[in-house]
Image (tube, rainbow, N blue to C red):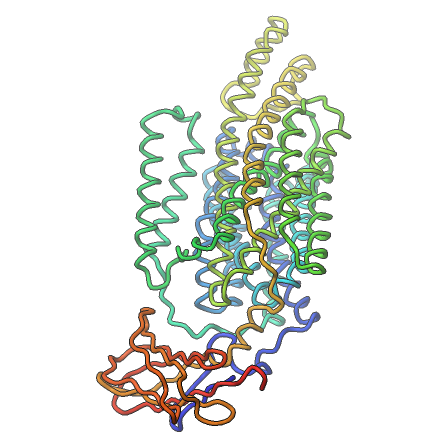
Length: 629
């Protein structure tokens, strides 16, 4: 199946087009070489989030911040990452994916340098915003590039490497952060510098190993839509961060911010319906799998980010462990994530079945969060290990496979937008979840502390009141034993409530996954799919308004009579239809200048894209191949 181009007319293949030899499927070695650079960049991005979790209590105390600053250091990065993911994904459909990955790495490096030099909480939070922009690019683009290189069926196998990278960075980050923080001659600032070498190595590796064709499309970025979605997400996260701290949940500030978020979201939807290249094509949500996977990802994000953020406070403040030991004690959760992502990926590649893993992951995630809601400061560690492992297994089975189910539904040209939709909702759920649950945690800890303070003698009560005053995180090592035990109990119970409140969201994700329809995974990657579309040829012809387009539809045995030919304009509207005569000829007259697509249907349909302008007549012949030829 091919098209022929008239003499004197220049033609070139669209993204991924051309001969299969020109863009042949990548070998396993080529994939692994490019994937190593991608995963190094992803490792650096994840490291920037996880390495500070055990160091945050020390960082906030040194910079003079409180619980609000503690939450904002995490939320700021999630905010910028969440808001930027759709833009990165859309840009990946328009320009060089490789260049975008490298730009996101540079942004991450700049943010890391500023964060490491921070002198106060405000400077650190601002730097985390920059880091989040880079991390948002990496989290969106790694999935897009993998989809371009690897078929959905095989992607399960390679997604296991992504899950393993996430697991290693998640467990290695807190461990490394704890060691750096506990080492006198280093200090917590090196926690923010340590990801820079990995990012630099990733830049070099990607430059040498990642070679993807560049999409030849007009770059029309929907900046208005990007502004509205960024503003809506930012206002929502600002509200949940300050609610119950600066103002009540039910207050005029809440009504104003929630109302503003709704208005901005509606403006975003209105803008997207009219944009030439929308940031998030709303038509994607007509697909049931994409809609449900996005919704499930949002609720999975709540459980995923809760585990990585709040465990450090639990182990350090409720069990009086060092930052290093806090990282060590989360190994069961990361081990579960590592094993689940690798095993599920292998089985999906072997069988092509993925829905069962989503459902099993939802069950495990719900069970893990529910059981963690029962923990206290003195809960035996073996029980905690089991609960954390269940949480990790659930995240490992769901996180990558929800993206996979979405990518399997779209054409190569929409991989970036579709992948970013799932990542956006996962990040949004995590960011809002951390903000809300952080506020809930502070309230519950205060509640339990007040309820149990009468168990202390009057002198200890005075010390206890000073230890929790001013909104600062307490230094457990400086407190008398009775006061320390009292405060550890309050923290243990309060943090447990956070996981208990997160469990219903995991249950909702499970229910949503039950309604996702399993579709067989494709066996070719985006590049291979595009290479097979040899009929998608851009032909540049010079024709005036009112010009005539004519040609002949041919089959292997000669001209094909009664073939249906459809002409579609650049807005997707049908400009005309005709049926070929006995000689296979077709013609369209009185055409306006612009871009057109000619679709000929005889055996398999064949499409050709045309740019029409200038004087003359375009003779464009189309050749159809019989399925048996």
